[in-house]
Length: 387
Image (tube, rainbow, N blue to C red; front, top):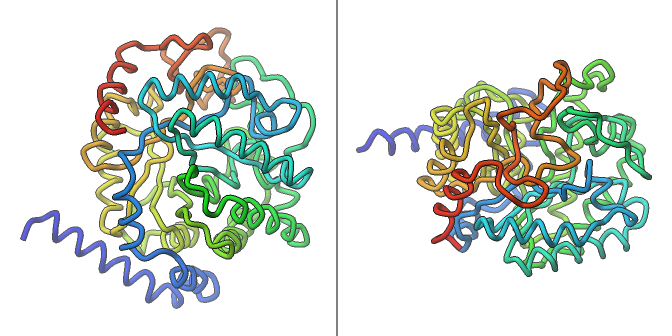
């Protein structure tokens, strides 16, 4: 028997142990993870769905004219011209999917109008043969989102205006959860049978503490609040019986194949997700190691964030590996714009006065020309036979 087969069997046994024993690890907490497995897709269902997909390649997308999710989706700044233009550029690269962030406040303000704008976005994406993976909640960056005109970018700072969803005030107040429940159920139910949608990513980096940016004002015991709401979010989304898969991606450290090393949130993510998603901003060896750690769970794999050039996470390093294992791949960023993610994470603590010579994220300049022609040629060569 091949070593790879033995490793796979070992990981599957480890996963079974995680599910069967987790209620004794954290009692009330991990018991919820056990319960979540009873309603998710079986591995066979998930793999059958994945077999029907092309190799999924794309980017995390927001139009270059939006500083955050609110500016992307609010009525007075919903920029269909830029969305259409830039999704056309994505299609030219061979991208067949994009990961797109929503926001609860826009739905709460006017749910019918928000759903209509989502439908408009889907119509544009479908024209370019691109299927979105929509993200509901996000624990990264500013914990105090507000509707209305969004602030201008802080010069030379990475994601200077990106906001969390839900904000910390709503996250810590369970009396606000019915609003979040209406948001999740309302969106999923409306699009539950829509074949233009790839899937639902329920929560991005749920326990991210944002230490380098907003750490001093972050919610105390954030993990506890997030764990409870993440479990509810999976339940709310499943209640609408979507035809698309649900997921929430692993992102923080540890050996993801070792059930004893997983945090409660990681256990819940693995136990409740129909397909397994993860982030990796490290070198090719680390990227391949993460894939091998997760293969034993027996479900489709999508890397929903990668590509940070100074971290040795590059297209030439990671994308061929993703294709080798048929792992979906979404790099962070697309067109250099108001999110300013050509700057590194350290721009929150280090002063920049000009664009970096080596971009951190993003592929195209504002006029659609490549930052690096060789990268674009590589992407096109890898995607040309997959769509």
